[in-house]
Every structure is written in C-alpha cells, then in structure tokens.
Length: 274
Image (cartoon, rainbow, N blue to C red; front, side, top):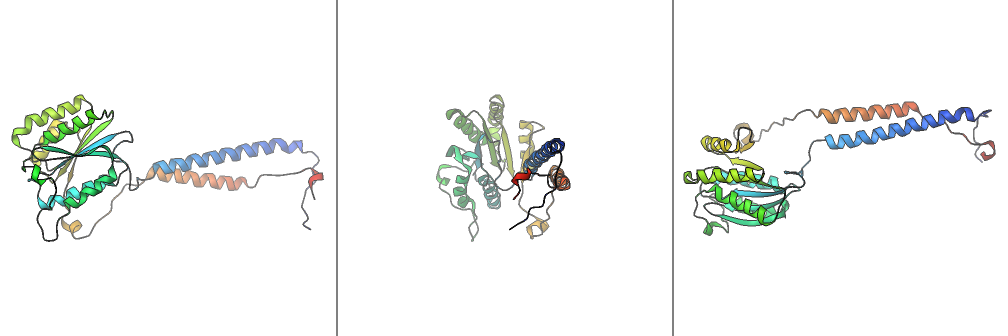
C-alpha cells in the first residue's frame, strides 16, 4: 500500500489566489512558447519545394528553343526547368523560336515540367538533343511571339493573377525590337509580372531587355559553371538567419522560466487522501 505524503493546511483559501496566479502564468508561458515555435517555423530558410511565384499566381513559362541556343546552353535550360518543376506552383508552357507553340495550358502542376527535361539533356556523343517541335520552328528568335501567346493564354483562361517567366538567351531578331517593346507595354498595361532569366546572354542583348523592363527590373543571368565551381570546388555562402535565432533563443528562455517556476502546488481535501 502506497502512503501519500501530505502537509496539513489550516487555511486553503490562503493558497487559492496563488494557485490561480501560478496557473495563469503557466498558461501565458505556454502561449508564448507556441507563438515562438510558429515564428521560428515561418522564419526558417525556405526548403526545397518552395514556391517560385505567390500562392495565388498562375505562371506561364516562355522558353526559347531557337537555333541561337548553343548546345552548352541546353544544360542551363534543363537546370532552370528542374528548378521550376521542384516548386509547388502551377505553370503553362510556351515554346518559341520564330513562331510560338502552347505546350502546356495554364494551371498545369509544375511537376509536369519534368517531362520536358529529357529534350534538353545533351546526348553522350555531343550535339543538340532531338525534340518533337524542331519541324515547326525555322530557328530564328522572335521573343514577342512567345510573350504575346502567353498573354493570350492568360486572357483566354480568365486568369486573374498571372505572371510570365521568359527563359531565353535574349538574342532576338533585330526586326522584332519594336514588337518586343509593344509586348512588354501590353504586360505593363495588364499588370502581368514578367521575370526574365537570361541564358548566358550577350551583354548588349541583356541591357536592351533591362531598358524595356525598367532600371528596377530583376533579370537573372544564368551562366555555366566556370573555374573552381566547374572543377567541383563549390563554396556555400548564406546569411545568418537572425529572425530564426531570435525565435529559438526566446523559446529557450521561456522553457527555462517554466522550469524555474517549477511544478505547481497541488492539494486535496483531507478526506480524499487514501
């Protein structure tokens, strides 16, 4: 038989207020811990599978497959498509050279882009990989056709929050410059965000695109690895996650305070002891 240890109390009411205050403090500490854990989760660095576009945005990938795309650039295309395919976004896909072709309709899960990767994987013997759309394209580059088809797809499917990602070497046909500028103006009028990913472009071509999109436009220039990176010596550089560290520190302090507050005082009427 187990003997309970008890301290006789003459006035339980004297401890009732302290018990309520202790309970309120512990509930407050628990709420603070939950809030800090949620804050730490939100402040943590993005993991693979993050969104490339806002959650309510339907994107159109406009991909340059013209003859100006060098064999070495196919690896960049494969890399960019793989990055997009790893997101939780939904995309449409436009392939263009001198003409544009709708490969995937808007709203297609990004994972479906993986089916396109094989068309940009360089064959072991070198050269350009075969693809099913070669017979439809003459090899020239007319970026405006790809952009205008993307805008048409967004309008046709009544997409309210659309965005376009242009992946190209930006070596556009000089005769298309005015129409390209008109397409960019149309995007601005319809408030369609345009992200440009340059595939190792000529600096003059990149500057022309930046002049159309404005000085604040973000143009990501993708390059093939060179030097120590190409040799496999990769350095990882990242900023210190200060918000995450602060949230974690507060969690530790709250846990320490909770332990310092110790086990709450409990009591029972004398008749309840056995």
